[in-house]
Structure formats: structure tokens, C-alpha cells
Length: 424
Image (cartoon, rainbow, N blue to C red; front, side, top):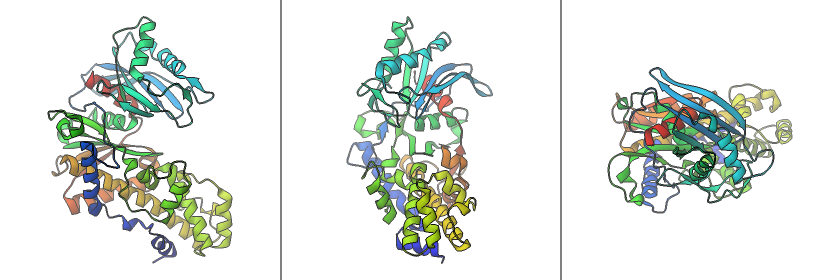
């Protein structure tokens, strides 16, 4: 065993401690409780959206993507070969450079969608902030954050506000659906596929944040009291799951975060936290004598560490920034790699549990299609290959569950268009 492994075992942080096939049942049961409206760490939020059916060839929808620091609008047109994105525009989100009001945000949105309204009657609006989705597929705003300041947004209905602004401009009769980026990843990844070739679909975000969604029969969402087997997308908010054992540095990171006691699963898995976990572990390793005083000094001087930095370290790159000697370089590389492996193991639990929940993936020729997006799964040296290997070993070999990991890029726009065209 290496020094790095000894250090991780001492603090209960080694990846092998998380055995997905052994943890899947508990997470699936937490999902069931969430669907029933019982006490659960997974809210299992109904989106009222369906992935059922096929988008008609030649149809088009206007799309809006508001989240993080960017605001985008475009027209997405579906063809026999896939889809085309037309009139794509990108701007800074209102409320980034200076605070704005809700009315100003809605006016800004109308400004950047109005020129598309003579070509379509449907709008898919990916609103990646905290909002409660209503039965008519609107979104009631709970909170806008991510460094965006929009006053008066609480309890506003996104689609209703935009419709009213468009009516004020003489544009009426438009249908709008609100969704988040995880649902958009699922819909955007699935829209050009032969859906009959798969036994289920999962949307996965593994990047700055962590989340998953899936389609379940409406009758499974007992808290809604609906009937029928037509599928409805459910947003798990899986970053909130609290059923994975925490190690010493998980607890330390949580105690120092701006939301202690929340987002337990996300803090173990998401890019926004992995760099900080690594920093805390390196500082402790230096104080405990696992790495040299010279490397400890470098770790202290680095301050904030981005997940892209530790991804480079995990691949043996840029180690001169942190390691004072070859032994420390080996320690840092192994520790960094372990954090990505651990994140992938957690996500494997999540995906296996969803497959178990919906009874999918039992046939090799009809796997579960995981439509994944985000910086970890798209750009990390190790995350995707580790996750795919885990799905093979923990899923197929141990549980008889079959998966296809389909990694997409920029699926928000086609996903938002598909949401509107399949559900309006």
C-alpha cells in the first residue's frame, strides 16, 4: 500500500470504501420515499414533462437558456438528419454586472426572443435556478443565485411573466415550458435516438454541480395522485442525497461551506467541491507528515484549487506546482485521482439506483441510456472511463444491469426545444 492510500484509509476517504452494488438498494428506497412524499433526502421533483413520443420532422421551437453567467436564445429546427440551431445569440445574464429587477429580466428575455416569434408558437425555457415546476409546466421562482442578483423574483411565475410581456408587445398565443439543465440533458440526448432501443433514460449532470433525472410512470409518483403509465420526468436533485458515508474531509468541507448540512452528495462528487477537498486533504497530509514541509508550504500558498487543476495532477501534469520531491508528486497524483474515482463511484450508485427504481436495463440489447453532460464527464482525464468501467463491473457483472453512457455537449438547446415540442 502507498502512503497516499494509508492516509485516505486513516480518514475514511478511500474510493474502495464506496461499493456501488452494495449501496444501490438504500438509494433506490430513498427515491421511492421521495416519490410518495414521505421523508427523504431526495425531493424527486415532478417536472410534468414527458420524453415519450417523437419530435415531428421539420418542427421548430424557440429556446432560452438562462443559467450561471450566460443567457442564450435561438431557434432549434429538427430535420431528418438531426437538428439545426439558428439565430443563436449569447449575452451576459442580467443581474451579473449590476442588480436588476424581475421586470427588467423579463423585458430582457422578451427582447431576445421576440424576433423568433413569427416562426414558432412554442418556447422551451431552460431556467437553471431554484424554481418549483407547476402542473402547467411553468416555474415558480424560489431563489436566484450563482452571483446573479434579480430583485423581486421570489414566487414569480417565469412562463406567465414572459407571456404577459409578449402580449404587451402584441404577441399572443405562445406556449412556454420551463425545465432545468438536467431534464434538458436527458431530452436533448434522447431526441435524435430510436427510443425503442432503450429500456429507460437518465439525464446526468456531472460538472460544476451534480444532478440526475429520469422518466417514471405517472402512477409511481404517488404524492401527485395521478393515474396512468405515461412517463413523466422527475428531477431527483440527487446532490442532496445523504446516504453515502462521509469521511473526515467531507465533514470538514461541509462545516466550512456556506450551506453546512446541505448538498451532501454534491459535496462528494461535484467539480466545484473536488478541488477544495483536495486542498484540505493536502494540508492535513502535510501537517501529519505524509508529505514534506516544502510541499505543505506550496499547498498553503496555492489557496483555492480548481477541479481542473487536480485533474491535471491526476494525469501527472503540473505536479511541480505542488510537489517538492518525486515522492510527494506520487502522493498528490494518487490523491487527486482517488477523488475522481470516488466521485464516479458515487454517481455509479446513483445510476444503478435509478435503473433499479424504474426496472430498466435488464436486457443487454435494451440498455438504459444515460444522457450525460458536464465538465467532469466531458473533460476529465479519468472520470468517464472510471464511470464506464464501474457500470460494467458493478452494474452488468454484479447486478445484471446494462447501460450505455452517451456523453453530449451543448444539449440544453435541443433539449429545451424537445421539451416544448413534445409537451405543448
